[in-house]
Length: 343
Image 1 (tube, helix red, strand yellow):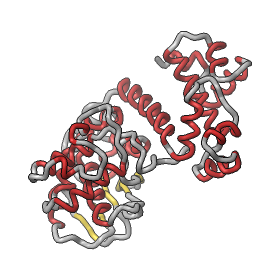
Image 2 (cartoon, rainbow, N blue to C red; image 1 turned 180 degrees about the vertical axis):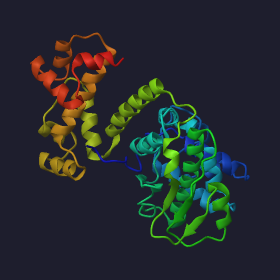
Image 3 (cartoon, helix red, strand yellow; image 1 turned 90 degrees about the horizontal axis):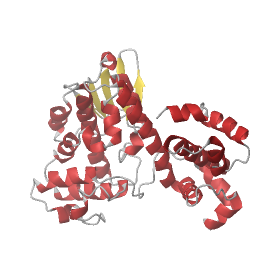
Image 4 (cartoon, rainbow, N blue to C red; image 1 turned 180 degrees about the horizontal axis):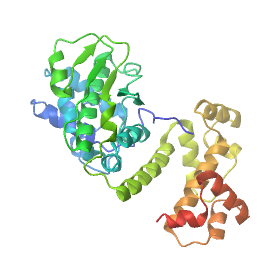
């Protein structure tokens, strides 16, 4: 499996978060050119769906906001403006969930699709359900930028849950691991709950009773289709992650041709031993990546073409169709006919 989150400088996200922050800053009289200074993003690109940006570029705009804005509400206003509809398939998948428990679970599963600036975890206890932000201050961004990102993240959580539930659904409590700021009243204003500072961890606590609630846009068929799309997007995102991602890219340049480890290592200008070490540090192996690429291609061919199973087997590198069927069953738990029937 490739690394859980993409690298900070990988340009794989639409600039919707940047656009929201630039809008908030513009309302304070800060020109987009100033907000975007040093980010590598131009003002005419923030609404362009074809433009891809990175977490680091977004953090650069946040650093500008910290430096130029005198309004401590800026991260909260930005988080409140970022409704799930801005998140594409990820957002729609969450809004169509069949229960709020599914929403919490899938929010974590698909978080890497949402320009993640923080790692999130969710734990269900008998009486409470808790979002935790375990690496809130572990990045190399300046402390005030990390606090800005955390304030925005908390507000996004409250906004998104309201989007899904179709009504206000505030937390029971918000905890922050840093000292209480002078503008602490703003936290309660936007989060709608008591806030504690100087706690061991950064947490957002909800009543577990809400987990059984049905989202107002819940739809079984839509949920299944959208979650399948998110699974596919997660797979595509792996093509941009670390050395694992570089291997994916080499293998996908000529689908159907599967060069050996020595050839791929040479293409990446390293020895096979170095490549093996890098992949191991990312929790994967060359064989696992080749299998993943074969599985992705086979699934795509079966769902989107009328190629015979024999032809699909050949295209993904199998000379024996029986071996392909066994491999497909191992990868997906399904046979070729079952995958075609999912359409």
